[in-house]
Length: 306
Ligand code: HMG
Ligand code: MG
Image (cartoon, rainbow, N blue to C red; front, side):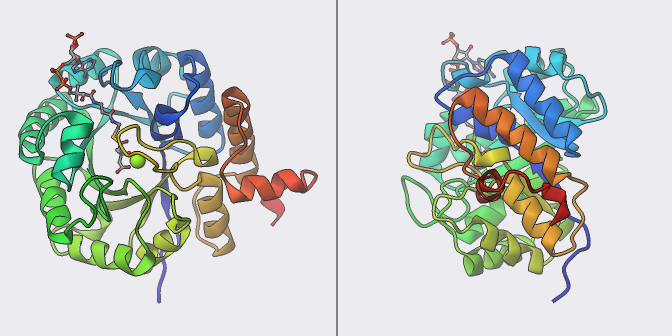
């Protein structure tokens, strides 16, 4: 087994995390969270969404969030569902967007109100327009290991959507276990399946932690060569269109695991824990991160010393 010596983390807490919280944070607080995540060494951060505020009120005013981020060297990405969202994202100065398709028809309908095919046609125009403005586009495939409405999802369908997203110009495709039902061998086989149509260095993984499998799934995917992992500070969030889904795997837990395996992330665990504490204080609940809980229980231990 040969694991990469470095893994890139895409911090999705300010978007995927906050989009499903009961408390809607102001753009100022969301920007402060992003500043703190940047100060912890995270360089790729999803900052919000330009979607319908009726569908996801927590992400309204993402333009204000972007304007208030102080750290200018971050790669901030925003979710965009259509040309209207892209136009708003461009006006707000976004340099990176993410389009989000699904491998399940019912989830696609519930999430973005169109079929998979319609979404891919729509995204092809969005990505082409983004590229015309020198804006990078990432692609998501949701429900890669199961759908809340349809159950089992076919890996062939996942590979086909992933391949379409890359062909239209996405620089990377993130495989989303939206409802966190996958287990390590399935996760690994899925990556191997997608790797038949896409180079491994363009595949990222995105696990929600509903059944506590996310870290094991990540490890299984690292073993086959994945080097980009999505995670959410404090394990915040979930998806408003995936009932019962827990938040993403916590960034603190991913960073701890990688540090203990001597895999470089560029992230200070101590500062990351502080950013998670800040987020949870604003949201008035405890972190889902096991590492944050453990350090909270023995709070006089400097995190980076482990
Ligand atoms: P629709 O109803 O088909 O769209 O929704 P429409 O074009 O008919 O417009 C309906 C209304 O939305 C109109 O307003 C539009 O102006 C407005 P009204 O006239 O009724 O006042 N609208 C917009 N407003 C702001 N920004 C826009 C926009 N577009 C239309 N861009 C639509 C289609 C896609 C817009 C809607 O379904 C939507 O916004 N969905 C949001 C879905 C979402 O954000 N889901 C969560 C993110 S996905 C996720 O979490 C999974 C992921 O993490 C990976 C994983 O875990 O697997 C990425
Ligand atoms: Mg997600």
